[in-house]
Length: 219
Image (cartoon, rainbow, N blue to C red; front, side, top):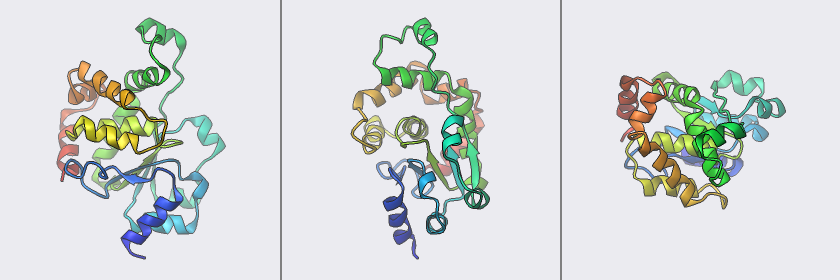
């Protein structure tokens, strides 16, 4: 099976499976990072072969331990890919939201804020995993491929200087629940930190790592 047929088969199997370069070919190389909903329900020898055919070496799983308890990868998949579990905390304790004064925001803006500022260790690990050439190429997913995956994709695209309208276009392609103002809020929050590089440095990521990612992922 050739690349195009394998990719079409994967896209017909896994929800929201798309190349992060789909709307950003000027800013990120094609066929390096794919984003998707969880592949867990679709594990099969055919899917495994198709993922291999399109060059996937690593799976980045952003789901919680509870979600993994309900549905996890089988041994065959785990033995054929580098598997990275990066557990985003989405608990959003009310007292934390109240203390920060974001409890009055709509729910999804609260979610964006909490993910950005209470998941810095997870974001640091994500960026470090992506920075290593031996891990390329990737598929990154949460459950629906919308929220945690959407925020992570936006962070990567911001680092690569993709414009706001392209990042929003990528986000809106996920499903009918995505809203322009939610992604615009994320970008606004990052800008309030002095821009994406200062935000990522505040996560504990070395500038050298950021430069390495830009060099390897930009076309």
